[in-house]
Amino acid sequence: MDLENKAVIVTGGASGLGEATARHFADKGAKVAIFDVNTERGQALASEIGGKFFAVDVTSDESVSEAVEAAQSAHGVARILVNCAGIAPPAKAVDREGQPVKLSKFSKVVEINLIGTFNTVSKFAAKLQAADADTEGARGVIINTASIAAYEGQIGQAAYAASKAGVIGMCLPLAREFARYGIRVVTIAPGVFWTPMMEGLPPEVQETLGKQVPFPSRLGRPEEFALLAQSIVDNPLLNGEVIRLDGALRMGA
Image (cartoon, rainbow, N blue to C red; front, side, top):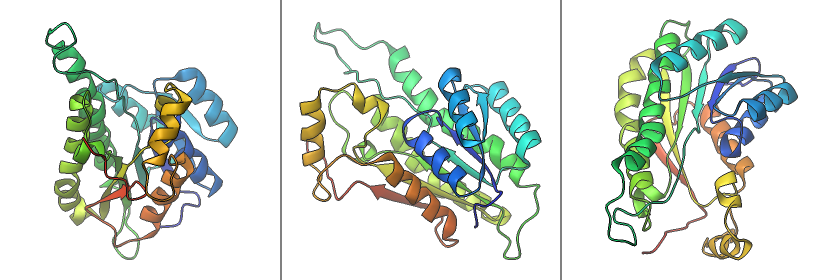
């Protein structure tokens, strides 16, 4: 699918992997709608790349529905959705004082990362199903973001790993559901990437994490995530698949 003049929605598009994807797709001629809670950064980026920004809470039915409608009014029916919105606050099930973690901390991660992803997928697909298909019956592509933490989660990542495992788990069922409408669903599971979440770590920790990657031995670049997203859009046979983007990294305990 050619990106030229295609309407695209990127959640979490104001920073990190989402920002890189928004920039890359805009460079390829796509009409990009950025969904994010960071209004200041989102508006600035949209202005820079010639896109549109919409303040969106991915966990809200109303917020996502209104934004999808508004994006459609601005750009036409979106053919591509890239879900990058997510959070990764560390929290052990039992803290240092021997107290159980507040359930709200766990549920917030799951609500944003998993339920938020499903929410945008559902709203996006409902609109796309009614759009015209191309000569091969294709209508569009959904790309969700998981993590290698879904397979090899570390201490303190129970909520994050569970939420991303859920994103992986719904990939194939969604691909099967939307096959009749010519909508593909693919999930990317990134390894350790240079993102705003990573910036908060000490330089020596960042270096150590990068050296754990077999090759290339460094942190992933957000632009490399965007390149894979484009490859998924370009390849019509990729569907119902989870792709690890991690330089062969397998995290130990």
